[in-house]
Length: 304
Ligand SMILES: Nc1ncnc2c1ncn2[C@@H]1O[C@H](COP(=O)(O)OP(=O)(O)O)[C@@H](O)[C@H]1O
Ligand SMILES: [Mg+2]
Image 1 (cartoon, rainbow, N blue to C red):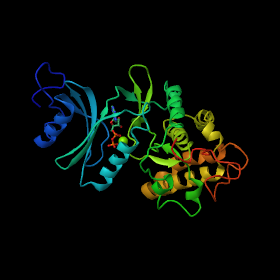
Image 2: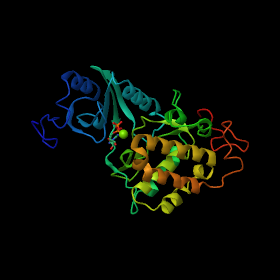
Image 3: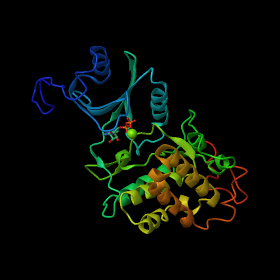
Image 4: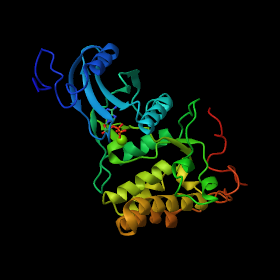
């Protein structure tokens, strides 16, 4: 409004969103972060959520994400994101400030300077993404509760499938290009927006990423070949893969209709034919967390 984000010297902080915020919120933010020099709206942010990149005088650029406290579902997702933040250190950006003010709840993250990942046929990012996914395979669990993947599929899952999807790895579950940022310097793939984290089998995030690759135009055989490089996928049980594909397809059909979901559902079904033979017993996890041969999650049943 009165100045551009690039405007020199004087205090600008006028761009999309900031000046429209009530003074009480701006003051609360600046109490935490120090003076804000510029602010610009960041992508995403559904509904009443607020997402800004703010440049602060003392603390550099931060990604500020806020929800109204009265948005119970949104606030609960942000709380989950706060709870898992320490566990995802090195993979996702650190929370620098957390505060509640004027009816809002905010997290301020270190800002990742980068671009959304490319997942299509000519993507230069696949190695960086695979490296990050392998680190995600080893994340420590937070002390605080994290929902089970099966709970996230509530309404789209049939008896027995929830047990097949049991697992004790911390998952992101929303691996799409907007949530994988490739750092401008160094090229590391950072995974942001852990607001839908869940506990489940480790192969879920790599498999979801492979399906996104197909959506971005990568031939299924290539995407599945990339997925085959993950030890977690090699140990995936057919019953669990089937439960995941079924749940995703039912969810897709419920939200987009039979026709609207057909292409996406077909991409998910490619996973069924790609399930590796795995270890003996790895597909028979329907009754317990550990099958007779031990599951992909053996030994990770508690935080450690
Ligand atoms: N720490 C960050 N640094 C830079 N950009 C980010 C950061 N976190 C998220 N973003 C960008 O902002 C977008 C919205 O953030 P996100 O956390 O996904 O919010 P929402 O919960 O509203 O989806 C992301 O898709 C990503 O492009
Ligand atoms: Mg998001």
